[in-house]
Length: 545
Image (tube, rainbow, N blue to C red):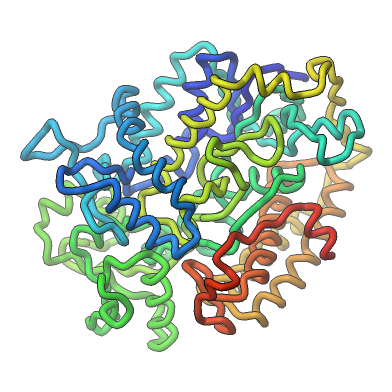
């Protein structure tokens, strides 16, 4: 079946929904999500949105904090417009029905939290369920718009490029839509669109231990890479320092806001340790805290550290962190009376599909927004709660780019594009596989390889081992993909394999330690050589191979 729409949005988190709600003013919108429409990283976000609100705070303070955290790689122009445009985007979310927590003393003001790396309180939140509240309001608004249609349990296979329809060279490509698998019916549909927005989230499932949901399999990054887009800074993987350590927790996140409200990191013997690593102690930026915990665990042989906030009032903790409190109590941990056991876990990808200041990728007609993309905001390390801010700012900018220049952009495309015939999905004689063990085995091997060799601390030897193994696995998966009918599991495996390859490639390129990338063989920053992004593309990696 061929489906025609003005806008195709892949993903239903805050980035995709914000863009879709606005794009619906210009035409029809088809949103594709591979599970339930509320399954997204946004829905799990506990912290909030970092926006200057307090009279004692300043845009420049937020800009400085972001640049400091980004370790020299953040684009200052991007940082400046994201920070200064934040208040307007926050007002828009409130207008759309998002109910953020208000100050008890001044109900007309937001309650502001503070997280690692922030010099001021500026994190607007909805208790510790900010993402869920944002998703609720945005889905409610999108659901009332007849121009928006959401296709649940659909997963994009690959982007449709003009060259694939006309046999043109890669430099003349334009994105025309995507091939999408209807998981329930096991049918592949062709989605044609004037503009495509990638908002598929990050790559958490590339790693063995992650705070991300099962859907975070780097689908958008892998599709964009296969289509020829430029990908940048994939080596900068943010490991959240405080993932709940419990066999039944399935990587439940303990929000950085707990440390923002006074939580102190301790070893199992009760001693503190963060004062040895950073003047902000337990409120240091995430990369510092994650490396510190990793170092202390290797020294002590312990399996976790402790996050202690028992000195705060019980009623305050239950009110401020109802979700975390309830989850801990279900597991027999009373955070008001005992420390919470925590370990680092993969949390956020600071690199991704390269976009300009309006969210445009290197492929005409293809935009990207949210964790899937690299905007220049985060640099070598994301400042806490800047990601939701980035998503709403860039969603609005992409909308503006199309609304103000859409006709011009379409006129730049060779005449007759609308009449281009896109071939239906061709299974090429593929048969149904009876060897699902191949998929599960490769999935597990990729994640363990990445965790062991491309984790918080790296080395040239570890990266070389990862490169050899991931390269071989990619070739095995490509062969398997060509011979068997596509399934969701196979598509996700194919995508995490590509993402793993890109992470390793970027990590091998950067011969220094900066932000989230720490290499034992190059323990210092090298501003003379590496004050720049690592950029890869399909063509560049083919040439090197």
